[in-house]
Figure 1 (cartoon, helix red, strand yellow):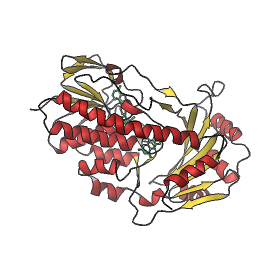
Figure 2: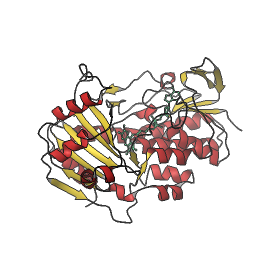
Figure 3: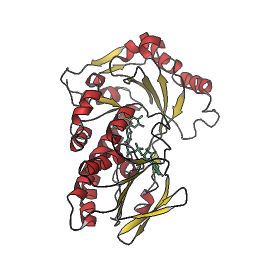
Figure 4: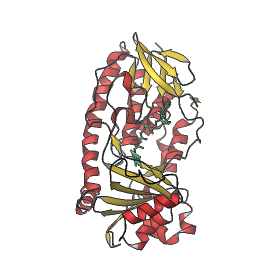
Length: 371
Ligand SMILES: Cc1cc2nc3c(=O)[nH]c(=O)nc-3n(C[C@H](O)[C@H](O)[C@H](O)COP(=O)(O)OP(=O)(O)OC[C@H]3O[C@@H](n4cnc5c(N)ncnc54)[C@H](O)[C@@H]3O)c2cc1C
């Protein structure tokens, strides 16, 4: 029996869910708030783990295309101390496919493929109704479905239909900037970053720069600060933000400061999380995927989990169970258990990466990198 299904959000979770359904010829309405695929910059790069994101791509029949687009060399990682001393310089073996990088824009285009996304259809509310749910759109229209899947990220409008919980600020914030055409315009910084990432950990702060595929590099300055740390700063003024960051990282080696100094524009991303064990009493007709269900620190797991969950939920649906609700409920239990483990790991990881003792961060790298 074909159920009327909608997914809210065309991020990694929603698109993987829809793509696996599409592969099995099951229709799905994909509703996305952005007015067009290129309405905002797609963001930096994601590493997709063999056992998570890559498994999801395999379920979507997209693994070979991913391998052509991804950058295994992007797994390279260099760690410096704030005075510029190289502490670690790890390069992957040529055949290492454990966590290759892919640009978010490339991943989105790969997943989107033939899917028919309804752009510019922001959802304001999802209301359970009988054994299904009613979706309220920003344009005032409403539509009913047998199942509404909230894959609408950290500030999900679907989440309140199943849970009253909202994200909390971790006490750590991040300011992101970009270096364009890094090899030609900033060859010294291109060399510093290498093929993958360079990370520098100081007391309660860090700078991480990561290479993307199109000659761009993204740079993140992370530090502990109250949420209103910028109360006297105009975040829309790049010069003011740059100068504030350079003061905050004062004393660090010049090449590291140059990563911030030469950035073109700055985006503030305070890090919020949901509780590590976020669960809810199953609500017929509504479920959540990805960040909407388990927002966690950005330590390389969120998109991976979002994609695998999307693929697994689609598989549950195409298996055509007699009782869809029971099947979704079983899926949720599995999602919660796995996401809870990762939330605990990444929360502890963030505390070590932006900690009073920078040696903790280097030790964390030693714990996770193969020799
Ligand atoms: C700096 C940074 C680096 C990261 N690096 C990694 C990494 O290397 N590996 C990794 O696995 N994870 C990484 N993450 C985490 C990862 O980005 C997220 O976990 C992932 O994007 C979650 O996917 P999602 O589809 O659940 O949500 P999102 O990517 O947030 O997508 C949600 C979609 O829903 C849409 N939407 C929102 N509200 C509405 C609405 N009301 N109506 C309709 N549509 C709506 C949004 O426009 C968006 O398209 C990183 C995060 C950050 C911030």
